[in-house]
Amino acid sequence: MSTKVPQNTDQEIDIFQLSKSIGNFFDRVNRFIFRCIQFFVQSWIVILILIVLGFGLGWYFDIHKKTFQNQVIVRPNFGSVDYLYAKIDLIESKIISGDTAFIKNVVGISDPKSIGKIEIKPVADVYKFIEDNQQNFELIKLMAEVGEVKKVLEDNVTSKNYTFHTISFVSKKATNEKQVIEPLLKYLNNSAYFTSIQKIGYKNLEQEIAQNDTIINQIDNVLNGFSNKVKGGSSNDKLIYYNENLQLNDIIRTKQKLVIDQGENRLKLISADKTIKEINATLNINDHKITNGRFKFLIPVFFIFIFVLITLFSKFYSKQQRIHNTRSI
Image 1 (cartoon, one colour):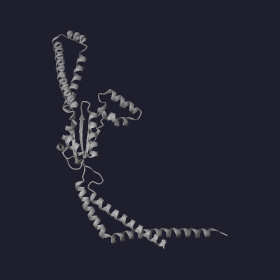
Image 2 (cartoon, one colour; image 1 turned 60 degrees about the vertical axis):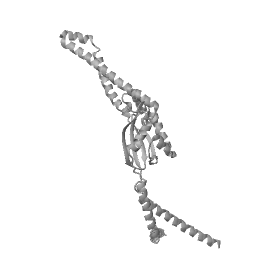
Image 3 (cartoon, helix red, strand yellow; image 1 turned 180 degrees about the horizontal axis):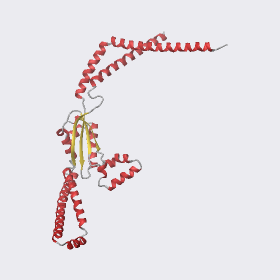
Image 4 (spheres, rainbow, N blue to C red; image 1 turned 180 degrees about the vertical axis):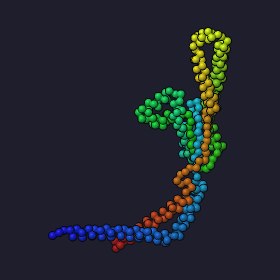
């Protein structure tokens, strides 16, 4: 006897059960959607109150709870990098502990509660780091060979040797240089030790520039003397002169080096008038957090979510309570 007919019957039953299961699933989805609509229709007054209340509260937060990012690029001079980082860490610890008296009286910020956070990071400039420094170049090259160059560049010890550093702080309202930057830099430069170092270093730099100018003038006089001697002599004298003054190239190279040093020294002189020199400040950058400007939408949704959660819990508890009471009887 053939068994094909029972197999077809089983397949028809399986398809029928699958179709019925799918139909039941969509029925459950429809009932769920209907219950949701019914719930919101029945509770529309409460939901409307929650939306209005949440929108008003969110509007208030959007206006009064804005935060701004602020950045100040500074150049620590005369070996003051560790001192600078320690001072910024101290200010951050005082902000965390809520010591507004320190921020106001010692640092000098008139509205200490407006500052929410402060930190400092180096401006990573590897090219400046290895420029004219063979040891740094060899270090980077060695680390690159073992695949750890990124780790070295981001290391705390290495990064502190970069020229520029960025002080970043969060303010709860718009600010300006007079309110925060000027008192902050005044506080950072208020060190008797580094003030003395700065004065001596600045004076030494001025003396070096003046001395180099004198040496360059002397070299120019020597070169001019040689040039006049060559012009006034015979061709035979020129041959003897160039044979007997082989150090002329060394003198020219010395002048070239001094001219380069003078250019660098004059650039250093611009930032050497302070221990911590401000390079540039960018203030009141809108903090693009997910909540910024969106509280008026997020809070109503949150209120409705809590209301739905409480309602579901209440219904669940009531149902379980009835079941418990029925079984107890």
